[in-house]
Every structure is written in C-alpha cells, then in structure tokens.
Length: 259
Image 1 (cartoon, one colour):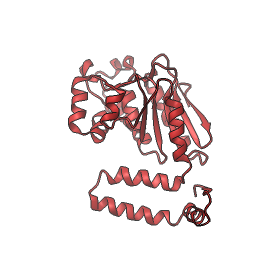
Image 2: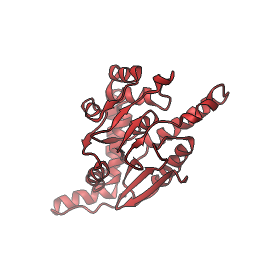
Image 3: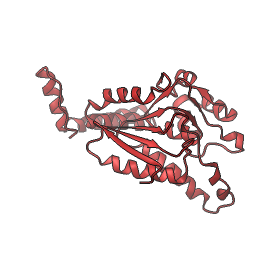
Image 4: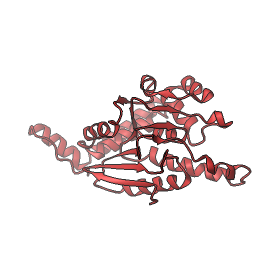
C-alpha cells in the first residue's frame, strides 16, 4: 500500500482516505494504492462497507495529476495506461460490498470519476462536482463518459462534459448524481451514520442486492429478472437468512455472521 492512501477500520466499516495534499490529485501512485486497498478489503471478513474520502477540507480529489499528462503524449503504450485507470475504477465499481464516496471538497475530473464508481455519494453543501477536462482540450478518460451518462442520463451528462462547468452539491443532488447533501464539515459523520444503517444487515444480502441492480440495469428486464431469481435462490442457502427469519419469528434482532 502506498503512503498516499490510508485505511482505518471502525466497527464493520473501512474508511479509505486519499492523502495527497493539497488537493488529493489522483496520480498513478494513488490509483495503485486504491487497488491494493480494495484487494485487501474484499477478503476482509470484518468489513461490510467502505467509505472513500479525501484528507483535509479542500478536496475529495481535484482531478488527475496533470503533471503526468506530457509523458502520455506520443506514448505508444498510452492505451495500457488508460486501461490501468479503468481497471482500478472497475475494481471499485464491482467491489462486492457497499461503497460510499464522502465528498468533503472539490470533486473534479478523476475525483468525480472515482465518486461515480462508488454506490452512493454524500456531499457537503459547498462542494463543486464536475468533469472539466474539455477545458484542457480533452475529455474524461477514466470512465466519466460512461458512468455519468448511466447515472444522470445522456443529455445531462453531455451538458456537463461539453461545458466542463461544475455543479453545486444541491444541483448534483437534484439530478441524482449525489444521494445526500449535508452541512459543511459533516460529510464523514453523516456517511458513517448512513453506513451504520447498511452494515447492520447481512453482507450476503447486500452483495447480491448490488449485483442484481448493477448487472440487471445493463440487461433486458427478462434477463434481470432471471438474475434476481438466481440470486434469490442463492440467498436462501445462506446461514444469515436462517438467522434473519428465526430472529423475526422470535421477535429479536438478528445477529448476522455474513455466512
């Protein structure tokens, strides 16, 4: 793990912090750190959900490291570099546990693309969110053109990417880019509260909910229903469903083992 990405564990929650001051730009080293962290957390049986945030109060992540761009120009292996970025964000996107992006400052460019790879997004009231790459003569290359349009629709995604202008947290919430807007300085605590409402449930169920929605939304309704049927059959073979049903019948809180 690089020293630009750190992890803290709290109850059944992991808090992943990008620590690359002053603006937490997402360099190749940060991408590497994120990949290593999520590889470890995937198999950590104590962790049910993950929060991702940026250090300090200026930026969640203010974009990619522009200093790395010149070496990409004319590089015959440029596609491989782009695919590496795609691979890390796809790893987070397909991570089998709920993820929440804690937007505690500027969320631009690669930072926005990282947030889009998470399941949920909580933003502080003063945060600006956007994909300004067109202002440099290029466009989002770490999944932004694909994930943003799937989340907010093609027309709004084109407007944001064509203009490069950021949205306020409130506007981002209105179009469904952000799940919740909270007071300045409170994003982490509010995200922990949200996560606590998630981590009390069985990871066996949560991971299948994520899979059903993510994969089902990219298929036909009939295919999605078949996927749901298969996952529903699987969940009935788990220890947690036995515990959940027994707890309901016995009028007590379930004690899930995530098995």
